[in-house]
Length: 122
Image 1 (spheres, rainbow, N blue to C red):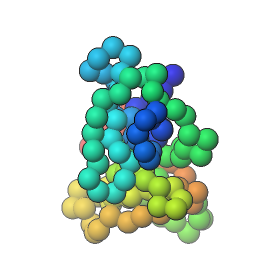
Image 2: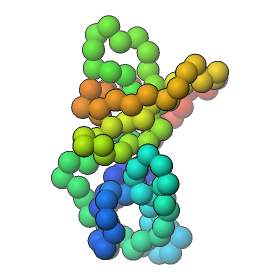
Image 3: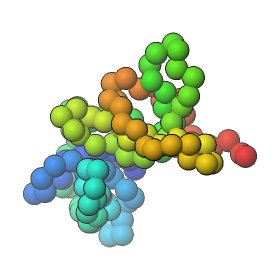
């Protein structure tokens, strides 16, 4: 069973792919090429999906913090890509944006709130 946000391989396609949503055809998925730019989107059969042994546990939409005691600020994961190692592109969750997106190794991040948890009301 696959879930939205999971990074997988797709038989016959190079690279890693992010599962965006099931469908539109039965037993199929819409996937996006998991890279920083030009995120090609396509539909594939579920039977073509392949789990990656090193797939990151962090997904788009997760609220994360670095794994250091002095960390006080969390960021929202905007994308997960492989750049030699798995990297999360983090966005500032403040309404004003607060600054540019940053990248961090997923190995240094802890999930504060998974993307599938209910969001707090404003």
